[in-house]
Image (cartoon, rainbow, N blue to C red):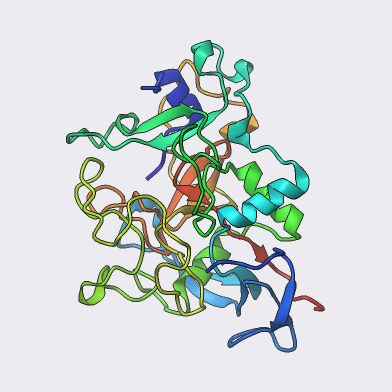
Length: 335
């Protein structure tokens, strides 16, 4: 489910597994499937790499065709970067995220100046059914929303250090990764890892969405966007280890939050006609990057994308309440 861009919501006037101390500390030998003789980076698992069938011919057109891809082995964070981890980065560097900075007026020449303030996109559940063709019916550009205040200025992340950090634009994810000496995964790396060693299956655990009635990921139950039955126990984000890990020991590879990758989005164009306040066509911020994994807002009736092959393109300036990230290290320590 692609969120509207920051520009679209501003133009629309829409107002109305926990980790240790250091992100890159070394913590003993690697576990099963690990690189031989490699020292394991803290809270990362070794993904062996190899050839695999990438994509799907059974769901959305942007996932087609199924093709053979190959990735080298790499380390991957066992869960998305958490609020607690991101806080350490900010405290160490003084970094200010994209959503904490005011929008550049030159990019939005016709926007209401009152909306040109720091903020981010927040999901607002309608009180009745709405057209699924208009995502502005449930997305709001909310001044004061950022990673510390995911619902707006009156919200906080107190008691949520183990939830994934959200309201992070692509550049924020890159900044964190650089600080850690890591990188964002490519789309192929991410999908290979998400499959957990299962070839050609719809989900990381097999082909049934809810085997034996169990919920294995944080997604939406009910009719999106107005009815959330919370049958999985969560409305909004959940702790990153709340659901079982996949075959590679990775948590939240589907559901909870979408995750940024480093790969450009090259599918069939889905950008709506340029609006009066859309970023200039030549501006780098109009570039899209692939996000993977789906989120707590994905539902069968609208966005059946909590699957390894699913993909969406988000503009690099997108910061929302349902996008996060995790990192990789491609060279084994000492290798």
